[in-house]
Image 1 (cartoon, rainbow, N blue to C red):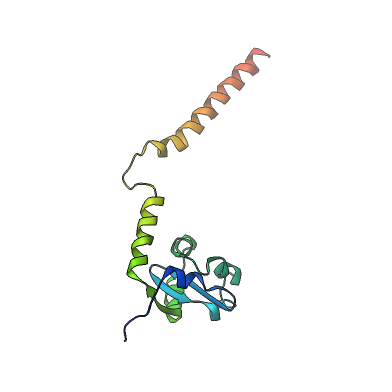
Image 2: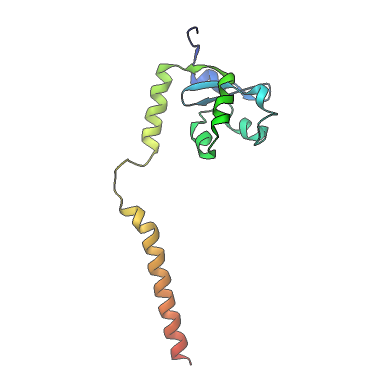
Amino acid sequence: MGESKTYTLDEISQHQDRKSAWILIHGNVYDVTKFLEEHPGGEEVLLEQAGKHASEAFEDIGHSSDARDLMKQYCIGELCEEDKKKIVEIEEKNHWPVGGNDESSWKNWLIPIAVAILASLLYRFYMNYNA
């Protein structure tokens, strides 16, 4: 196996239509042009990600091991080291801090429950008062 070809984010971004559709997933560059019509989710799904970093979108779908094996044949290279560092910086900047403040997670369910209980009590009080 020879040395892998490397591409920049700029080079990848130039391939975003039916004539040439490349996507970046986990540092690897895939030319999915010939797979557009075969993609089970439809070509629109791939064209929406064409020319872009699509790792998050790819993982959000939960592709099978068969799909992961199939995609190997479309791999044409990998992202250059300089741009890999840019991607890591962007991902670190845009994600929630790991092991950070858990306060907001309990507020996401506790506050609505408290509001629902309060509304229920007020409704019962109102109904008993007007009966």
